[in-house]
Image 1 (tube, rainbow, N blue to C red):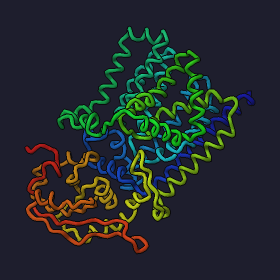
Image 2 (image 1 turned 135 degrees about the horizontal axis):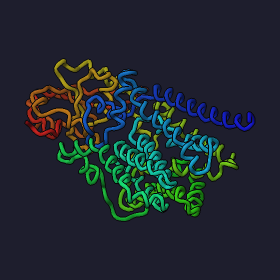
Image 3 (image 1 turned 135 degrees about the vertical axis):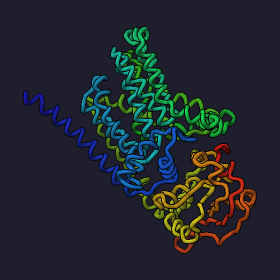
Image 4 (image 1 turned 90 degrees about the vertical axis):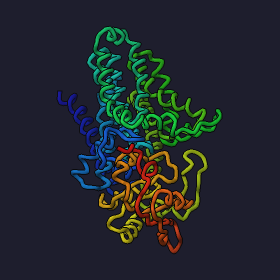
Length: 502
């Protein structure tokens, strides 16, 4: 009896030790790496509690609030939801793998291979809606597999998980086709004659209610943005699909990505409803976004939840004969890419002097763009030195204005000034009414290459240009901000708020 229990105990200890080690490492990196503009934007949203937000559902933002209360206004507090989401993915692997015939060994292999993929290395501590959505994507698939294996109560888990996936990020609903795989099982089809699946559907809809409530209160601006505001449709081309495929080869490491294809095909050929369920869920984001990529550029990471499920399929199929060379190669590749990305995030000056640009997707990849990570503390100090006590601080860049707010730990009164026609990061335009903003004085700090002065003069009674704020590195100018002292905001509607006047 001792000999049969000891291997299981060792496997369990190894699995949980691995989870603890990765979680601790992510916490250390999260505490050291400075926040990006998007992360600061989410932090600012969490300080303005609402049903939902203009361009994001609310769950990851809500989850920051208790950690901010415990850890103060720190980068670790902002990133704790992402760290816990990556931990949750690991905790879900043993029961999911067990349903496919594997054990703790295959669950450990799955998580190790996930942690070798560059997108998971970075995304597992980066505050974003994607990692939380990925966790609930896996949870929904797990529930669908249980449904395929005859567990009627799993419908409740499916409904709750898909609702939370949507509340994390709207594409979370792409896991819905997994239920088609589950319905190939006769027991799952019989469930449709009972109230349970339909009540679970109502539960999913109820969980998503905050998004609908916010939309109804704000002329459905959130859905208008998702359906049309963020899309730039082009003629049909293979270029964007090529970029999407190439990006996912890198995000998964080329070694694992190539191995995923036969693993997925073998899962389909099993004709087992449980395996078919996870295979359909894994394919869904690639099929949908591949179709979208015929006409427009899409995010390189949008297929990431499918990659996580492909890891599980591959690890379970090869659990008895681990491919050490593949593991070493993928781990080395992912580790090098991930370590390089983290190093650049913490020390952007190391590569800033090298001029390199990739013109494809995303077209913002350039060493020059790293200049935006330099000098934020100095910019805050310069702004605080010239700001008058009664002035708000504004910028047309949502990333700049929210980074200033975060670095000041919320003491700097910030407001987005949408004078450049932005279409993202506009949640703060719904936080204050025209009555609250009218008559205010604003110190407007602009990085826009065209002067915002003509637009500002339409909005304020008086506009005075101040000396620019120049940020230098090694004696060379890397960032310049033009500064305007704006007195008496007359027309806050549009540029500073989208809330209707009372």
